[in-house]
Length: 330
Image (tube, rainbow, N blue to C red; front, side, top):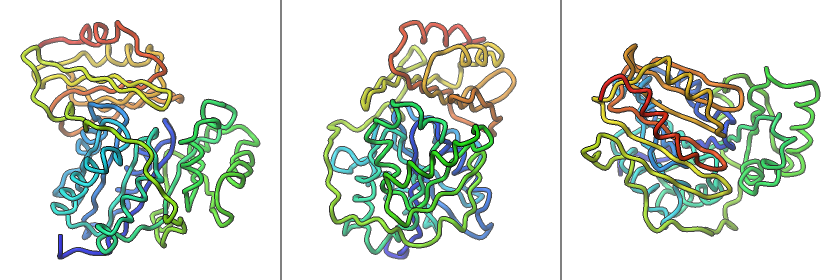
């Protein structure tokens, strides 16, 4: 990696359902055709779905390179999962811009610390840190009393009040007042729909001081569920827990095909905080994203296997049986 340096690097953070993935997809549409961009995406769940979601819409031939770090905050285990994934991504992509999406339940301050270490100081140029917030959640103490939610605002250079088309009167003012109590004085607040952020807003060095950052949590065993060989039964299950939430995910071999109509019916019936999935169906390959606003579906060009990750306050035992019941062949 000696032939690349000072790569403009943006962290896009935000709590569960704030629209981080949508924002990155919108930013990728603004990529100059002659540039190579890299995206490092981190997920709370052990399985990892976002990588398949991005890769199903953007190929490396278009100058977009994706790498995923599943299994919780990617700065854990002394930063090893993040460092390995990032180094491999940079070596392969040699990008003109790097976008990093930490998990909504991660610790962005520690991620910033890792990226500002001596190892990356010449390699990366840390630009604006962007935090997406759904202002409607400010009435929910599960958000406002959560340390990670408030840390995401505190470390931001730019706060994006996303999903403004769904706000009630007064929601924008509420967000602006809340940000003033949590962020530095020069914070900028803008509003957006469906994660549509102007690329120009990402330029400029971060104002965040990193001298007082400290790493306060560890994960001894980095996730291997995302890429390990599937067992003979044709699917694999993995769970994770932390920050007041639990996740459960499954990987299914490509030979297993699902009924699209049954999947949609199932996904919209589950009581979950967040669901992301990529499924091979009789009608093609589709990505699913469920948040408080409902379920969205997008057709994908390709994927290697079906995957689903569910984040909720508790895991329900019959979810696996109900997903398997949506199969049409195995």
